[in-house]
Length: 159
Image (cartoon, rainbow, N blue to C red; front, top):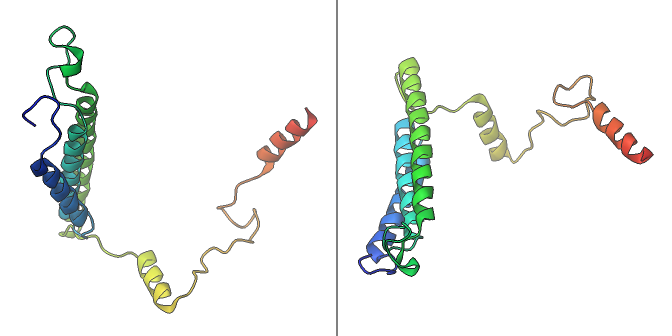
C-alpha cells in the first residue's frame, strides 16, 4: 500500500487468511491455552481485514490535504474498538484458563455429562427425552406464567 488510493497487496490478504485460519483452528481445540491463542490470532486477523477495507492516504485532518486524498478514519476507529474488545476477552479467557489450571492442574476442557449423553444418543440416532413438555405450568419450572400476556391481550381487544 505504497501509492495513495492503492488497494491491499497480496501479502496482506494472505496474512489475513493465515491469521484467521490459524485462529479458527486453535479455537476448535480442547486446551484453554490454545483457545486463548486462537482468539488472539483471530482478533488480529479480523483487525487487519477491517484496516484493509479503508482507503489509504493522508491524515484525515481537515485542511492538511484535499478531501479525495485523505484516508478513511472509520476503519481505524473500528480497529481501535476491536483491539479493546479483544484485550478484554483475552484477559477473561486468561483468568478462566488460570483458574482451571489452579483447580485441576490442567487447562484441558473435559466432557460433561450432557456432552456424553448427546454423543450416546447421536450414535443410537435417538431423541433426548429430558424435556418433552406437557407437564403443565405447575410442574415444570421452565414454563412461564401466561397471565400477564393474556391480560395485555384482553386489554387490546377492549380498545
